[in-house]
Image 1: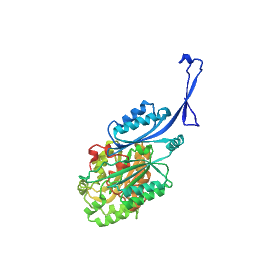
Image 2: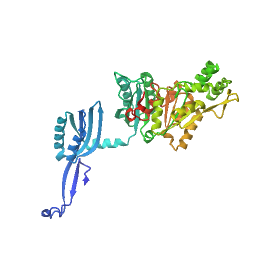
Image 3: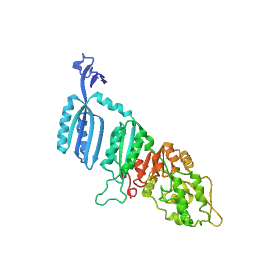
Image 4: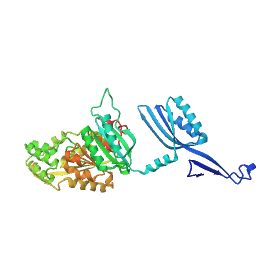
Length: 442
């Protein structure tokens, strides 16, 4: 079988000698069968067996399926099939498909596709893909319109759209409602940085979050996730909690806020704050740990990450005692934080032991753990909120700013500010329908 490059047809050659004795004088025979491509589009009420019925007709005529795609939205089917069939049977194929569509109560349409058009589609297969996710408590038409306009202006084509979040009840809505849509994009943005900036401005204006990632194998194979602790896994800064017990709450909180905004060096601020805790009895630490305000969605997220085999680390500028408390709660693999020095009477000395876990150290630890776990750095995720998290957010394959301070949000490539920590799961590609009952808890 050979293809004539100058026409939309196949030339089929066969040696007939001995097969048809009465035509034995022919050394061979050649006849031409014209081939054509047709797009079949089917829409209507979905039902079990519909696709099988359509494919049965195509199979009867030895039809080649060049491409196929199907979507189902609230039992409304949209099915597209690109077929290649010889011109002797194409009319009969379409006739039988029309009768079957009428029998099934669905709409069907046909459109010819030239060789040139098909080859142009094939050529686009090699182009890069990107995944853009938008996330919020709810997603409106205006938010989606603004997002798709940015996509179009960057010269990207939307290949598919799918909903990652579950359907929400109107009569009995969840306590912590979430909505997430994923766009699969083909091509390269005209200006990736400009697109990122536009999406950031849109997210702030429309109260939504976004994630723009290259669609490669690393995105599908993330294995290590590192979290900041204070104001990320928990909704407080433990040093502020300790300071309130020591009667220096306002002083320490003011220094903390300046440090998180990046106005003063973390090491300097840390030393100043720890010094103010001198004389505090360590017995208060257990009470603080047992009453830590856990961030919305953290339990759900941790359950899913552990269930699917992720290695999890806490890399915190806070304190080891509280990191180890959360480690027991969630089965976390690694905890690196700061160690408070305690005197023989069980009181804080106002000093710390060992190296400070600051921004630089967090980035180093992320790389170190990745090496120990034999994980490529592109397979790592980092989640944090403060200025001292920026180095590890930049180092990780996927860095997510979570309810971050303005400076952090402005420098992060991915950001979550409208929902809880379980929003991270969508950025990793999880769908609500992938999760069991415990993983779906709000």
